[in-house]
Structures are given as structure tokens and as C-alpha cells.
Length: 269
Ligand SMILES: [Zn+2]
Image (cartoon, rainbow, N blue to C red; front, side, top):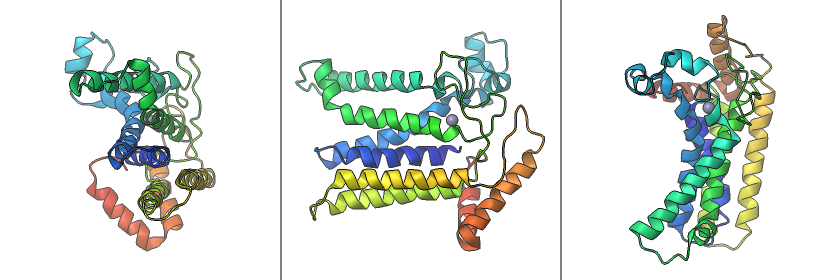
């Protein structure tokens, strides 16, 4: 799935988690933003596709394979491997926990009693980060198997999960729009919550679950098999079909708007 939809899905997770924070707007906003960042992070393993990879990182670690080969292979640092696992989600969450403890004690000189106090204080921030990261892994599972056969969810186990080919790598505008919808509604609810009393936590969680279910339904009802293993021979056909499905789903007007937006972006979307 594309990096923009991943990031916004993480932001959507963050809007639900931040509703549980009793603190001010600044810490709520950091939960939302960090959840979005976490949801983009797993694709850091696509760095081997960078044109300068072989002469820099590849040379530094003395890697015998080229970046392109590494990307498609099943090394722990290949795409969809360790960085797309629960273990990585946990490790990065611990690192964020340590970093916020160090920032609080060293830089801001807050009087926190110790690391456990700091972790307890930042628990929603860390929860948002972990769930945002996990959201990315879930979203990659319905993409084609390609050379990996899904994501290496329970690394160091060698099993890969997903790779079902329910959706194409990108052109999932409907999922993007659902994520935007969840973010918009939940942020509006948070703002209104300052004026009218209602159960913000329950409502934002409800909106998120509704959006997630809707996206799940959209993914499950594509009515076309994007699945392939290895390097696809029907790449152009899948690409065209994914766009046709979006046009049928969204209607010409919204589709044309989305396509123009897509073409204005430098990333695959
Ligand atoms: Zn990914």
C-alpha cells in the first residue's frame, strides 16, 4: 500500500487513542502525529531501492547483493521482513519510550522519578505509536504476494502472512478517503468536545471501528484478483484494473479529482 494512505491510517489510529488523554491539546497532537509517523516507518526497509544505496550503505556493510536484489529477497533487512513485524513494532516503541524519557530528564529536566514513571506518563503516546506501526502491517497483507508472500509478521519466524492480492500496491483512493474521513470526524469531535459534554472516547473509537470495517469491506469486495508471485507479467493489466475499479467506486468527478491529486505527487499513490 502507498505511504500516504499508511501514514493517514496511523493518524486515524492516533485520533482515537488521543481521545483517552486528559492532557492538553499539545500532547494530544503529539499522539496523533507520532501514530502517523509510526505507520510510515515500516517502509524504511524500501531504502535499498534508493539509487545511492549500493555505494553508501551497501558498501559500508560490505553487502554482496545489490539494493534491488535485497529489496525483493528474504533477508531480515529486505522489504516486508523484520521491519514489517510485531518485533520491530515493539522494539521501536521501546526506543521511543527511552527517547522520551531521555528528553524529559536530560533536555527538559522534568522531575520524573524514573523510567517507569516516564513510561506510565507517556503510555498513550507509546500505545498510539505501537498501534500505528501495526496498522501498516495489517494494511500490507492484502497486497500481492510478489517475491515475499506477504509480511514477515512474527519475525524471527520464517513464515510470511498475507500477500492475498485483494488490492493493488497503490490506487486505493477509497481507502485513503475513508482514512481522511475518520481523521476529519474524530478531530471535529475532539474540538466539539470542548463545548458540549459527550463520551468522546467511545465516539472516536466507534468512528475508527466503523471506518476500519468499511475499509475492510472495500478491500474484500474488489471483485478482481491482483495476486501474483515473483515478478508479475500482468503488471500493466493490474495497474489499469486498479484504476478502473476506483473510477467505478468513486464516480468520474471524484475519481478525476483524485487522479489529478495523485499525478501532482512525486510518490506512488
Ligand atoms: Zn509496507
